[in-house]
Amino acid sequence: MSSPSPTAGTTPRLRLAGIRKVYPTVVANDGIDLTVEPGEIHAVLGENGAGKSTLMKIIYGVTRPSAGEIHWEGERVEVANPARARALGIGMVFQHFSLFETLTVAENVALALPGRPPLAELTQRIAEVSEHYGLPVDPRRHVHALSVGERQRVEIIRCLLQNPRLLIMDEPTSVLTPQAVRRLFDTLRMLSVEGCSILYISHKLDEIQELCHTATVLRGGRVTGHCKPAEETPQSMARLMIGKDLPVCEHGPAATGGEARLQLSGLSHASDDPFGTDLRDIHLDVHAGEIVGIAGVSGNGQQELLRAISGEERIAEKFPVRIGGVEAGRLNAAQRRRLGLCFVPEERLGRGAVPSMSLADNAVLTAARNAGLVRGGFLSFARARRFAAECIERFDVRSGGPRAAAKSLSGGNLQKFIVGREVLQTPRLLVCAQPTWGVDVGAAAFIRQALIDLRNRGCAVLVISEELDELFEICDRIAVIAKGRLSPARPVAETSVEDIGVWMSGLWPGAEPLPAEVADAAA
Ligand SMILES: Nc1ncnc2c1ncn2[C@@H]1O[C@H](COP(=O)(O)OP(=O)(O)OP(=O)(O)O)[C@@H](O)[C@H]1O
Image (cartoon, rainbow, N blue to C red; front, side):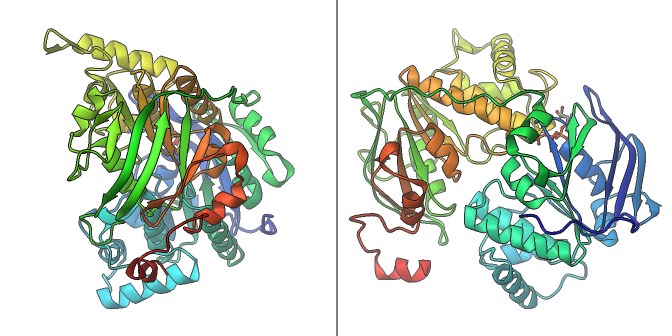
């Protein structure tokens, strides 16, 4: 339940009047008024591309508005840059991470703090905050070795260390486990009771209902509604947001007896990162016509497993990974794609798409061969643009068209583009990490249905996700990865969210005890 709503009648912590932001191809914010009271947890709701992140970036001084006023605690202010925002008492946790990969957690946090405190002292403070708020992270680890979930924890901790009076959270829970979400909500409620205001963006309507006092709905850059989430249901909020009822996934029975398109037989691989997770004797078959899900808490070997399957990480022996029956362990990513593998990585900016390149060029990166973009040995840019345009249309990617830079898309729209680009190649095997991360409820239902349709057309689909509800909705079988080992895959009808939750700690029937040093490190 949400904490009691803050008392009205005080000077608002933040008041926006007529905020407008015009980009070359779109009006991202079109005269937005918004008021946030002290201690209020205020949700901003809207479809992908509605203008939520743009508005938050304006408040945090990352983007300058084309028109409009910002009033902070009763006074009109110009927020020229994030340093000014932080000086006012505004903190922000971004949807896309802004961490330096080659630095440690503590070094990254130090960069954001005024006065650059000594590292030893900072390490201690990080450990305290992470312990206090239940956000486990080791301050000495390098960021490049962290999973997405762990990186997000660092972003949150970095913000909390600055004692903000307004905390902006742009989809903070998208890669947190249910337990971590509970703890984060406790933290946010504590902050709210202490008077800190929170602007909260999320596509998870049940979370908004549970946490937020008020919500403002945006559509097409304008405010289209307000509500008190506690008085709504997730369905009624979805209707407010997208203007219609949510579609329900149509599944149909799983095909049986399809050929094995992915075979992992005793895949073991030592991570070259000292803080990474070693893969231990992983066995899994994914057949044509089924969706297999891998559940697990981030940082348990998902990244390493994805890399071993995609070919980003080649392994010493060729036999433990077979794609379409071909021993593929030593093949690189391009060679594996030629076997019919398509792949949606965990990070959409960087691994999934090159931010500065156009959508058409990003299509070429993975679809050149499978989508017939190469003719007579030459790349056809016209075909690439047509392919990107088809993807934009079929997956309802709101963008400036095939020539728009990937970085100009809203997070959810870029995710739709990346998933669409892979699905439209009609893969024989699709491996998908966090397929609906940051995607609005309507688009998430669409992507899930696209995966089911692929499976119904005979594709073998492997989905790695931390969203148990999503896995239970779309998968035929589910396995769990824990500390680098994979459980057996169980038919969804024969298991439950509770069972899978227990398996996530590594305890499934017949699980071998972990070697002492791993068990100690994990304890
Ligand atoms: N730097 C930019 N250049 C051009 N267009 C941009 C830029 N940033 C955002 N836009 C456009 O502004 C609109 C609003 O984007 P914004 O990221 O604010 O949406 P959002 O509501 O946060 O979406 P999501 O839920 O997908 O994160 C979109 O059409 C987007 O393509």
